[in-house]
Image (cartoon, rainbow, N blue to C red; front, side, top):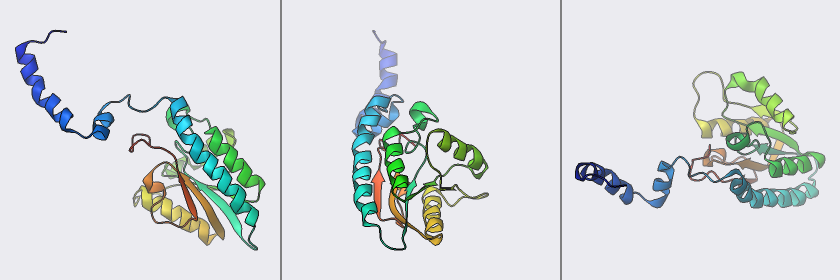
Amino acid sequence: MVMGKRAALALGPVLGALMALPLSAQAAVRPDSLPSESEWLKDVAPVAASLQDYLKLRLAEGKSGEKPAVVLDIDNTSLATHYDRGKPVEAILKATEYAHEHGAAVLFASYRDPDEQDATKQELASAGYTVDGLCLKPHGDSPGKAQVKLGCRKKYESQGYTLVANVGNRNTDFDGGHYEKGFKLPDYDGQLS
């Protein structure tokens, strides 16, 4: 493609600005910069395997009087929302099935709207998840994703659960603690919400 001198001069500052961006910021400009579903699942696999291994060890301890639980984010953690809406992330589902079979509750913490409570519970159940608890953002003004997720974990703790594992794909899923061990799935520098 041959470009006229005027068009080249007009694009010069734009191209210069793009070239000055760090590589991660350049990638964020491209809408197709997320990996394919199969590549994403390959990136998820080692985290899910680590979660499964940890649960085998941690749940075998069986501390007396403890109510162990796994807390999970929903979108692009439990459900493949970006790639295959409503379908489970199979490796995470498998880990939660193991946890449930070995005495752990399966709890969810999400920034989804509170009006989506019933639909979300149904979506998770249809995908194969046991839903022992579902905590969504409160009605009205929300304090932000990190605070909502932290509030959910604190709520579960107040119900007597020991949160042995916390699984999510965003940093906001982990802020503030209140869990024993975190397992972070890829979000590709925030591009996969």
